[in-house]
Length: 196
Ligand SMILES: C[S@@+](CC[C@H](N)C(=O)[O-])C[C@H]1O[C@@H](n2cnc3c(N)ncnc32)[C@H](O)[C@@H]1O
Image (cartoon, rainbow, N blue to C red):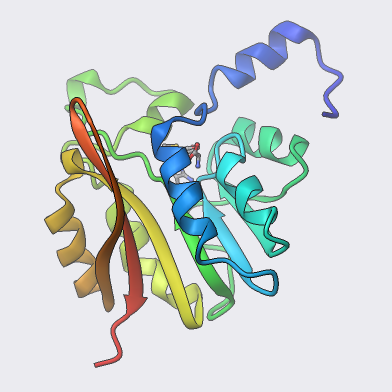
């Protein structure tokens, strides 16, 4: 790690970065099965860089993004190529073989929102899909031919509504992994361009 700032300042930054949890593990394990060494891979919303690091271990060329500058710093310190970005905005059309995203998905009423980076890691707005929906509307553009998206969602996010939105954006969705927890079921959706 390459960070000479005082320990307290660094700790304050880390408190604003999502720590890998069950959802991170499920996405990393599932997405690894899709990646080969000559792929170009994008992880959106990398947080600490946990998922991107697991995907880079395959030998693939991995780029990670986050909107949170402290997450970008942490992921860069972990040795990743990182771009601070909103979703897939800065990338050219048709470049990625695999795109992975563990988005903020917790439904959060407006009165419970508080404005910090950890909130932006967790909160999916009132229906849980405030970040998922614009991702689904734009991700197809950056996919290479035969490219695939692995998107983690939760039963709290309404998986059927996510599939419908994906279809509206020209993506066919199918569940490829899931894991049950006391209050939710985590699901990984595989999304591929609808060729019809
Ligand atoms: C649930 S955390 C997942 C972090 C990490 N990928 C993991 O699985 O451990 C969601 C991440 O998405 C980032 N994020 C939220 N909105 C974003 C956006 N519009 N564009 C890029 N990243 C975003 C957050 O800052 C946060 O790091």
